Image (cartoon, rainbow, N blue to C red; front, side, top):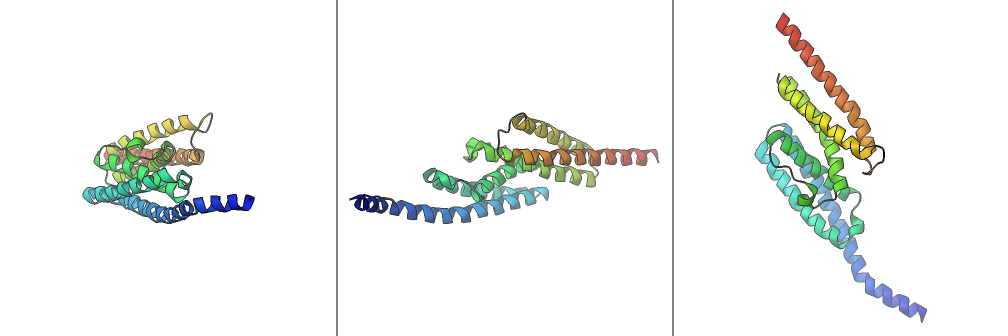
Length: 202
């Protein structure tokens, strides 16, 4: 009978569906933990607290590996907070490298898709602006210029992925925001240079 075949099918998939549901709940918790740890890594990096930042980052990477193991079994769960977690840990690795010169981890090492790493790069440019402003606050215009050059180069490289065709979902909006961010940072550097020149003249 038709109903017998359907009943047999439902019985055969019930255990997997329950496992998928439980995995989804675990994924959401782990993804939010990665987002939190990555944010703390970035915040600690801005404050120059290297060892603490590296410890938080290490915890985030461990969680990412756990997430990846679940996603390997249920690829359809790679969405929402999970994608955001991958993006945030990507941003964190770039910020760590910026501040402390630690080796940059790439998608293959982190075990995440390229598209999330690329959007993480775009978000990291915003953190680089913060680093420029902090350098200017400390009077280190040379360091500010150095980071600014990095920002401009990264922006140009990301732009290549967007035009004429969008290769990474969600990147266009980020690039539009980055354009203004780069322009504003360039203006801040210019003002710092002008003020410095006038102070020397006085």
